[in-house]
Amino acid sequence: MAADLIPFTGDLEADETYDGLVFDGVSFADADAGNCHFIDCAFAGASFEGGRLRQARFTDVTLRDTRFVAADLAETGWQDVTLTRCALSGVQAFSASMRRVTFRDCKLDAVNFRGGTLRDVAFEDCLLRDAEFGGAALRRVRFGGCTLARADFAKATCDEVDLRGAELGISGGYESLRGATIDSVQLVTLAPLLARHLGIIVTD
Image 1 (cartoon, rainbow, N blue to C red):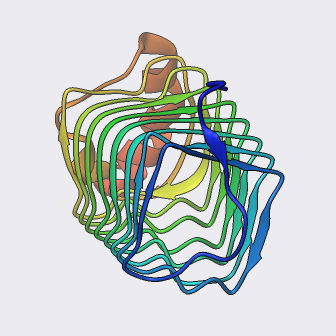
Image 2 (tube, helix red, strand yellow):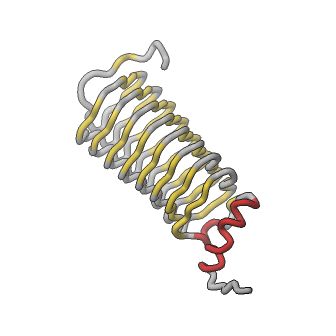
């Protein structure tokens, strides 16, 4: 954490710009911080319970051990952001735009990325349970070391998406994986599901 960041105190407010601040151990319940812009900030041990951050922007931000529960992050913008050991549960992040974002050792439970744009995004050693990528545009997105449980890619578009090294549990959108890369072990695992999806009967 950069020593020159200024500790934040008080409450978040909508339409504000927060520049060069550290949010250390702070908790926000039902915060109304839509359309805010966080620039060169750090979050450590922070938590968001509910609240509305719709259309907020995060630029050059780090988040560590931070929790988002049932928060509204729809239509948010994320650029040059790193999240480490963060937990997101029941988060609405539909139509969000993410560029050069890294999720590392994070847990994402029922996070809605529908209709979002993810470019140069890395999920590293994450658990993604009931993640919704329906209608999202994924370009150069990696899922190395991740566990995907009931992930939905219906109507998503994949361009240079790398699923190698991930444990794949996909509930829908197999046809949308065109443009994704998997390894041979994953292919063996997915083969029966792909056959079922395509209506192919396999019998000996």
